[in-house]
Length: 189
Image 1 (cartoon, rainbow, N blue to C red):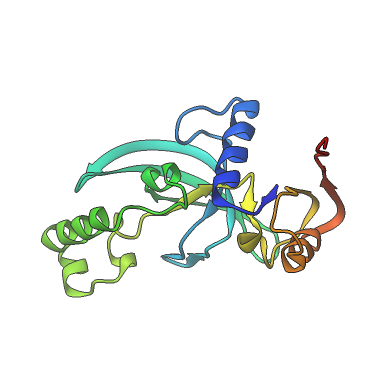
Image 2: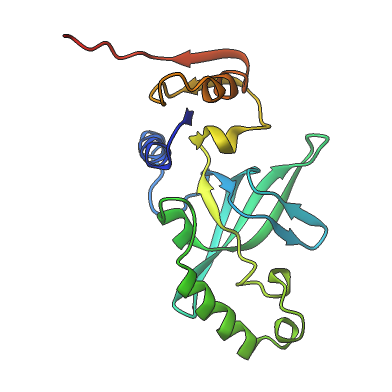
């Protein structure tokens, strides 16, 4: 599902999760999208990549943020599946754009500087499992901007976009390999 606004994407993701019977912030079987690049050992998960939640583990609170350990399944460039276990920041899933409050992130970084000597010496996100936690969004619906570069066999295109925005329409339509589904609402005058 491709929509033009974050508000619409969030609404569609909520409704799709409800129809699939998925409850809570994260559920096994959830389709998620990486919202920020994350380096994890031999793997780099890139903003816009999608993954499937295979397992949900423990939850920890660190510096006023909650983190949940999850196992994700992805496919590599040869379409070979692999799984990765990493901390996720569920607060990002609850926000409109998949982001976390910058003040909370500053508090987290300050906390990790005090408690993680490796991060203190070399403050890159991949040197701390919480600062480098995955920021995810649900992956059932996404903005046209996020859809750029991806393709699916079928795309449902949300038709409510700015009139004459041909770039949006072109990008959304060309994400489909085989079929585009779109509806039009008729207004009575």
